[in-house]
Image (cartoon, rainbow, N blue to C red; front, side, top):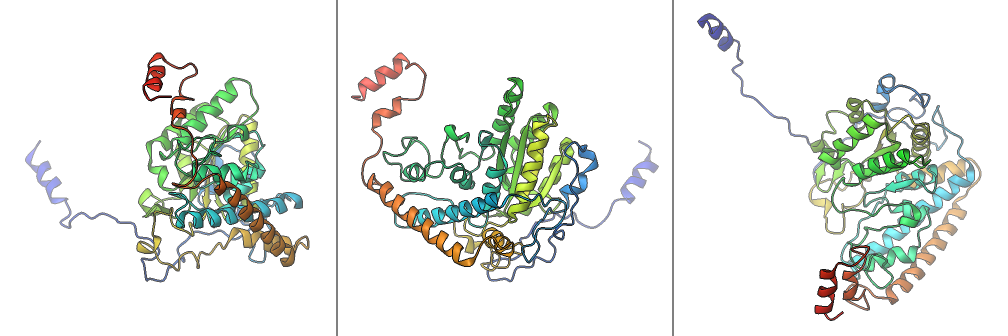
Length: 421
């Protein structure tokens, strides 16, 4: 290289040291959260494209926020799909049931009756609205904070509690961590403790459904932190290439265990925008707005059923409670964050909407809450009668040799004999 070129290149260098950016949350413990920089579209402001719109013609929807209910609970805008009142009442009931169930199981863990629990407080609309918008036999690949899907599809409450306690009522025979349910008969795939594995599983199932000439679609959920996993990107690649009939939900509740969502790239662009690079349509939705979640899920499902492929949906919400019973969120975030979250509480918002329509009342709501609390408590007593952590009967050790292979291997039979079973 000529000396003149080398000198020119050297001279062009900056003298200042290189720097990195370190994402910071709205507030640290003891600080007042600032949500002024959140990109929140006004209720009813975001357009609703036709289901056959090309992904490149709807990129703006990944950067806006679909909202239907205004501050007074009135539905506005093109995403208002006139959901039947009975579905809305059913949605409210299942959201309240989910919260009551969470509360009882959380208390049970604190009383030493189970080892672990995860709540979904403030995120109930995400699972319940989706479950009601999908067909009952559409396959769901959930993460560990979508218990509302099980309850909405009326998976037995007693069976769910049995799985929490790992007692004789547990259909999984104590082989899974508490809260990692499995309900094949309700078209819900087994929950995995390994993050994001359900994404490629859902895409693969959806591809198989299409290849077999079936009519069922798949839907799956992960958290914001899971979008940094390789499985997330593998799944989007397959979904885009093969136009898999699947809905790819991202629950952005601002926190992945103790990591702020900015660590996973949420400050650089909305998580919905990740679909754009794969040529997928992407929606960003107010996850605390039942009407918005229902409408967006319905839109994506219609697109999938028309063989137009997958849709990425970012559900913008807030994790009110800790990541799990093993977590203390006060150590890494402000206790004021949940209280000041600008999108409110999903149960309160839907209740307000129904009251404003004149089809619900505070008295009816209180009566429903009392009814559900009574039912959950009585079911809990029944479940605990079959045993809790360290107390009562569990599945026999001999069951460890069952449900492994369709036909037992000779080595398996020998091991079982050696163990005395």
